Image 1: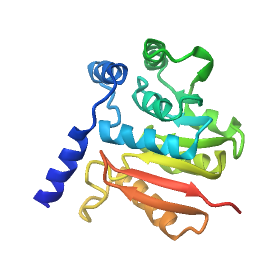
Image 2 (image 1 turned 120 degrees about the vertical axis):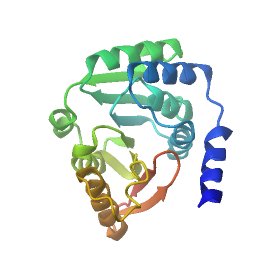
Image 3 (image 1 turned 90 degrees about the vertical axis):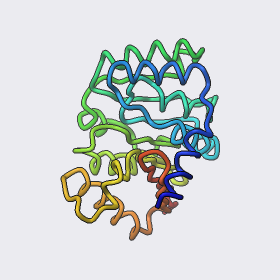
Length: 210
C-alpha cells in the first residue's frame, strides 16, 4: 500500500497548474472550499479534450478551479455551472475573467441543483461534472446521465470519498451513496464506466448510444 500511496503522491505533484488555475485554487482554500486536486483537474482537461466538448455542465461551481481545467481542455466550449452559493459564484466569475475567458462562454446559475436540474434539457451536454453536496449525489448522477448526449461523459468527483468507500467498516450515508452508484453503473449496459483513484477518486461514465 505504501508503494501505491507514493505513486499517487507522485502523480499529484507531477502536474504543474497554469497560474490562473493556481490562483483560483488559492482563493478556494482561503474561503474554505475544497477544489479538485491538480491531478484530477488535469484528467478533467484530458477528458474534455477527448470528448471534443462544446457544451459542458458542472454541478457545483466552487470558485472555478474545475471549470478552468475543463475549459483548458475544451477551448471552444461553453460552461454552464450551477451552485447555491452566490458569493462563491461571483468569485468564480472573477477567476474566469482573470483567466481571459470570454463572458459569453460562461453561464452561471445560482440555485439549488435539485431545483435547477429538472429544467435542463435531455442529451444536451458533451460533458457533465458532478462535484456538489454528497447527500444528493445519486440524484445528481441520474440527472447528469439524462442531460449528457450519447457518447458523452459524466464525471463524478470524490467517488472514493476520502478513502472511506474502499473500507468495509465505513457505512455512513455518503459512503453508502457512492457505493450505490458504483454498484449500479458497474452492472449497467447503458454506460461504460471506469473508476480512477486520482485525487479523491474520479468516476467516469460514458453514455452508450441506445
